[in-house]
Image (cartoon, rainbow, N blue to C red; front, top):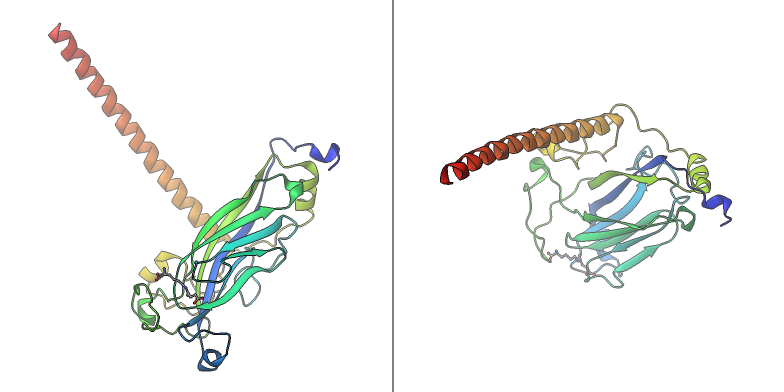
Length: 258
Ligand code: SLL
């Protein structure tokens, strides 16, 4: 890197929307026959890190993210051979078969020009549908040979929207980012409510479509954050008043004792 490229764009924050998560499908009888599929396996799943804007029939993935992501490491459950899977080019994903849900550790390494530290996300690899209409509300841990709830043709989806924020980026890296603007998210939903939101269950939606992230969801999330922030501030205020009041009582009592 030349010294010129090392200049930071101070005061600039630039973010890139991503999604991470998984989709899962129950294995068809034909797939179960295959020699590379263990007899106790019930599902085929893909865990991935993608751009947030969606391709027509999938979750995310509309934009290339390899100009800022160098490597994604997916740390799988230790029942898998070589559980640390390093993916150095897009698509940043791992497809496997298995029988159980587990926590996947996702580590994102940025391109060296960014000078950014890696970030880490945890994702609960989901195999079973949430919806009560699609099966038991929350099946317990699946054991080999345990009951399998079919996922339907579009599978089970568990995705999380997030934004990677670069503060005071290097000038050259900022230029790279600006040369790859992300596809804007659709303003309104063009698909049913996504399965990953807990309120989808309370709305009794039998989710049959892959989720889609929209600016409406982004706004709703911001409103929830603002609301929570307001509540916390109110609580802080209330407790501070309480402390002040108690301190006055304490001072008075002290004076009385003396
Ligand atoms: C459980 N938390 O104890 C889970 C563990 C492990 C998942 C799930 C099979 C891997 C393989 C597989 O699905 N492991 O056979 O290679 O219930």
